Amino acid sequence: MAVNRLCAQRNGALQHLLFATHYNYVMFHIDQGGTTCRNNAAQKDLAMILDNFMSRARASIAKRRQYNRLIAEIDSFSSRDLADMRADRSEMLYQVHKQIYG
Image (spheres, one colour):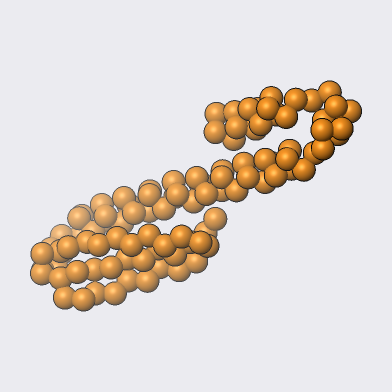
């Protein structure tokens, strides 16, 4: 899932970064001690950390959506449908979890 928007605003020494996803909002507060960042390496490190965090969050959200979609499909089967397929609901749920999350 892609991030919808990134809002950054500076209020004195405090910088607020708001990452807005579809349903969730995560607020980061970064105190720069009242001065601007003196070296670009620190800014790059922070950018890399936040980029890594957002990439992992997007991957996690995508996995959760896929998992929820498969669970809903399994839950939509009636007991008769499962009997016709000779399938066990709990085993199917286990296999879905194993497939998505390893």
